[in-house]
Image 1 (cartoon, rainbow, N blue to C red):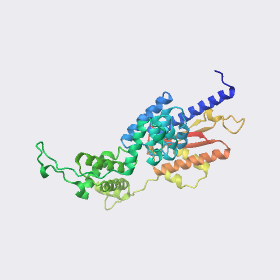
Image 2: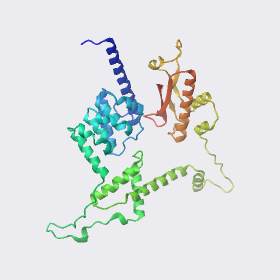
Image 3: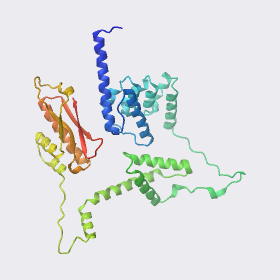
Image 4: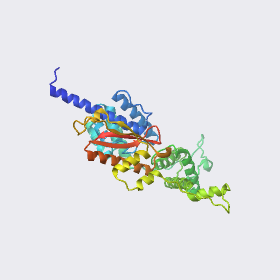
Length: 382
């Protein structure tokens, strides 16, 4: 079979575009799920492994929030010829972009999109794919869920093996009339067990599951709203306690407890100066801010890769340009809102300098996958 030169060029462009899209998706998956995720191997094997990992996160209530992966990367991957990659895109893209997957040729991709869309948008899909039993089951469950469950039937009085009623001795106490102190104790217990192990909006999911599982196992009701309110109150108390540990009043209280204070001698308590906050409050130009931020965050640089360097606008300019690669947070601390703002300003200032020079580069930062005290920088074309 012979291919014309133009057709061969189109095939090569399509293949290169596919490779770039999948490689970008691999990087985003590592940033999202961490370095433990296997991103090696062929495209279908990699995407299949990611889908299995997402199934585990979904079953444990830790599914990534929308926007955790760049939308542009997922849109490019959604046109892949591999069904497992399209399935990853259907599960992570915002809902307004996944309606096209209802007409996908693969059943698993259609079902992944149908699980996230309302009944009104997926009911027509069954007419076009009459042999897809899994899709039909999802549509049926969506219809039942959105229509609302029927009122529960009255539970018959329990009886023994001879058919005689057992009476009040086996009836469980209704939890509807429990005092607020009971919900507070349960909320404290749940916060200690799950508060440090779950990420992002876990309170509502946990309160719903505790109430549902208690009703399924003991046929008694727990007020979900009361439990959720107690969880929020417990979390607020813990946050206030953490903030109070570094206040001046707590320092003085600790010194008095250790008998470091004397009536004749009063120690001078000085507030520590945050260098990141000081950098933000300083009125600096873009170049001065970049220079000072690179010293503060100990930014390590590397030369521009040859694949990006060839897009430079300055013809005949062959000098190597260094770009940020890694940064370390001051004093080995973790990322805070102040640090995020300082890094955003640094990246914007660096990009502004490149725009003035006429270079087609854009810099972004993200947390380091293996160290909480480091950040990484990504360079890409505009």
